[in-house]
Image (cartoon, rainbow, N blue to C red; front, top):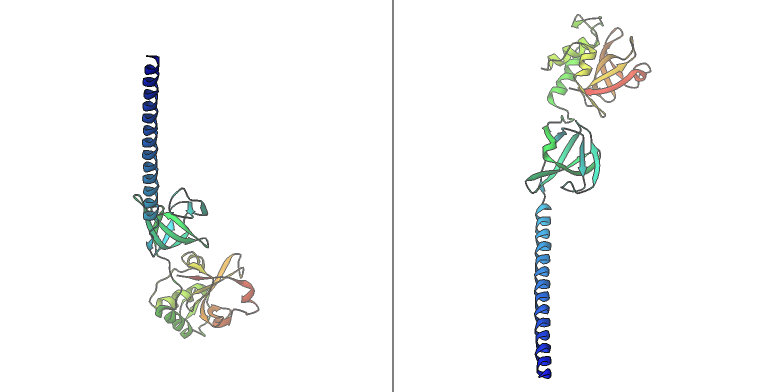
Length: 246
């Protein structure tokens, strides 16, 4: 009898042990399957997020903005672009419902959320017909006497000369040296038709303006008359401040 009981108990234990092993195996299999699914799903998301398409255009930062190594806030910050910085887009991609742009800004490339950018048009440096017309108009005025406050061919001051030459070329510009300085943007490589500003001549600060005509020369109304001068002129070269463009 004892032997029979022992045999039954042993068989029950074996059955219980086998049942436990099966449950563990099933659980392990389920976990592996779940893990495999999650990994697969993660890979799918990663692949989808990495499909960048070409994007072009120039944009302005709406705020001080983090530029990241890839599309998403989890990626490290490559640089911080200040509000108003100009960025050139090269690619775009979707991450969830958001669109990210790959841009070049501050000499570096990185990704920015599209909603942090506003579209803008950056003026390109080029020699246009109007620029050539400005130079031609200015050269046609060479020799006209300098006259303080002058705005006509009977006599020009520096800004009156610039205003008249631009008007002949079909563009209306403001009257004074300071207003012309304010409405233009600075360029490092001048093109014919750009403005040349000088400082600390008859007064402190921006005080004189001429028109760049190429070959390191500019034309202006200064001294006795409207004339062409070298940017290396002993006097004007030392007073040079900047090149600017409308």
